Image (tube, rainbow, N blue to C red; front, side, top):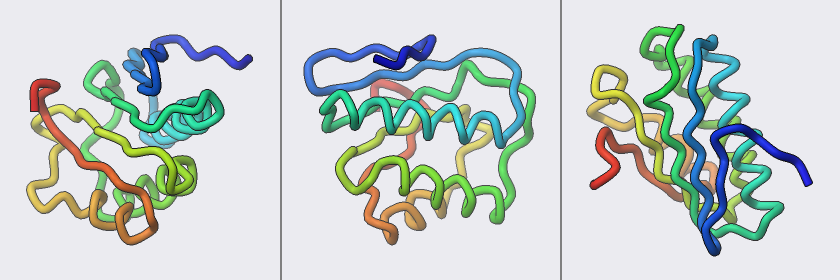
Length: 115
């Protein structure tokens, strides 16, 4: 079984809270890897908390598109993802969420875990 630091499973839910300094591309791949792992473990839901990551600026529209496509592929239409992002990186229009939905990946983005 694959392991990933910051990843845990509780019932049919996965929680991934990565930390560290990474590029945007590395952050996208970390999230994609965690989504695939969650699916392999039979999880239906996943909380992906990116607030512990640093080293990249808020993604451009193109960056958000790449993120949405990669994560939608990784979620495989079978994993609902709640994405936590720092307030300064939240797109008020949630364009990446819309792009992911259009590719069959349910989920939403939030700035607080309580939401």
